[in-house]
Length: 195
Image 1: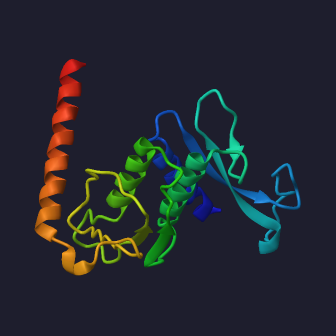
Image 2 (image 1 turned 90 degrees about the horizontal axis):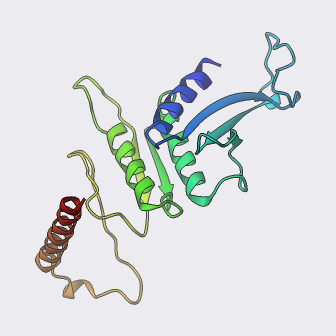
């Protein structure tokens, strides 16, 4: 149960970064629906226990167990990604692959998840020998995401409607992206000045 408590604590810390959202992990007996464990004996049978992921995205809502039907697509994506990140506290898995985890998320939550992911995979001390690696496969990334120097982003174009590689002009593409970012930053600054 120490591992579950450690995961739950980290999960709750991550959830606290999402306004009034809360999250926790519980070890639940499958033989006693009330979750009492029936007077936990010294011998726990693995098959009689499960882990429940509980979320609460608004203060006025009750805790809900994460299921395929109890949360929205974005809430499920946020919860799943935060759970995966929380597991890093108790495992030594060198890498994880997540596919299109950001598809159900709104841009605000997607940005928060990517910032947490980037922070958790960034060395904080020189003596850390093993950091988690995440391979995030997605058809889209938000503009102006902040990455640490140890992050890598690979853009892969594939399919019959893609431009042939010999037509690709990296310098032209980079210039257009810088111009687009500058225009977006100017617009953001104007919006901030109006407020």
